[in-house]
Length: 215
Image (cartoon, rainbow, N blue to C red; front, top):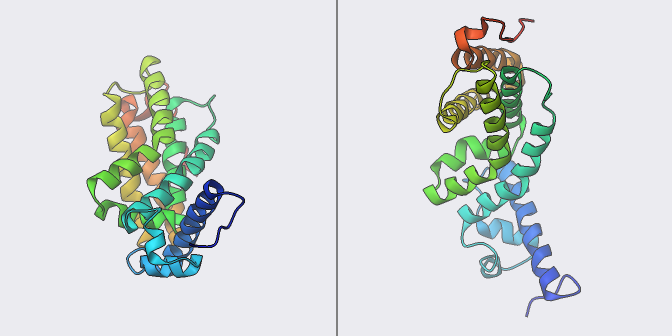
C-alpha cells in the first residue's frame, strides 16, 4: 500500500491530486503538452503510473483538469479588473484584450488553450468551455446591457460571444507564434479593439458611442 501523505485517506487523495496537477503544469511548461508523458508526471510526484490512473483517466483528462483548476480563478481576476462604470463597448474591449494578453504571455495555460485544447476530444473542449463560464457570463451581462442602452447593436448573445471568442483565439494564436509576443502585443490588441468597435457598436462608434482612443 502506498505511503499516506496526510492525516487521512481523503486528505491524502486531495493532496496527491493537487501534486499531480502541479507537476503536470511544470512539465507542460518545460517540455510541452505533446512531449510530456504520464510516466514523466508520475515520476516527478513520486508515484507509480498505475496510481496516477486512480486520479485521471488519461493525459487529456489531466490537462483539462489543470485548466479547470487554474482558469476560473484567473478569469475572475480579469473580470474584476474591468471598470463597470465605463461604456459597455469599452468593458468588452477590456475583457477581450485582457484575455489576449493572458493567453499570449502565460507560458503554460495560454499555449495549452490555443495549441493543444483544439486538438482534444469534443468532450474535453466542452469542459474547457465550461471553465470559461465567468468570462462568458460577464460578457453576456455587459453585452445585453449595452444593447438595452442602444450602445451596442442587437445580436443574439451566443452569436456575439462566439464572434468575440474567435477574435480572441485568432489574436492569441498570432501572438503565440511570434518569437517574442510582447513586441507586437499593443499593435494586436489595438487592432482587436478596432474590430470589436466596428463590429459590435452601432456605426462603428458614431452617435455618441465611445470608441477606443488612439495612442
